[in-house]
Image (cartoon, rainbow, N blue to C red; front, side, top):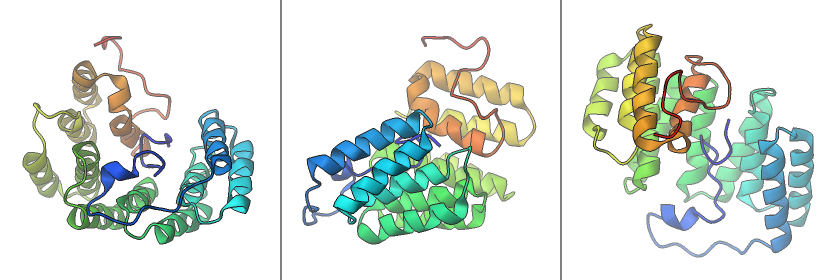
Length: 239
């Protein structure tokens, strides 16, 4: 999984953008804990998981009530080379316990079930997220609807997936969700050439960094190789 891109949304710096209703400000996080979290993030990106976990352990000793510690630890446990679902779940649940009113840990929990291929529970969780937080920013709201559509596809509910796509996405949106939903349908139908063509069109319109969260879902579904994001062959390098 990609930190801050696929399903691990940390609260530091972006929680205010997701607020649905005014709420008391969270307790301030010390500079020491912030530094350890950033160092852990860097280690995680470099796949130096043991060092990242050490940083998180140190942060927890300073302040055990910071949800990001547990969210990031859960993300590490779900890294492709680890995939320890039993260790990851309590971490995401702890983060949700510490932030009961925030959509962030709830998204992470829903994504946990998606990565686990428990598409029924993932679909229920993503749908509840939309119901409970109808004013999510579009960039996150579209990602949630996209994951709902993918769950429906994997459950064999193509009409339900088509309805989600029709009700929430068009090619004129400010996210690549429409293009990647079209790609998902093609991959599911066994047409990788058409799927990759839709990926290329999405990348050409939105550029690779904005498409990574969508493309990473294809890795989890084993529709594409589990490699760092790269545009398909012949796709423009700089759309």
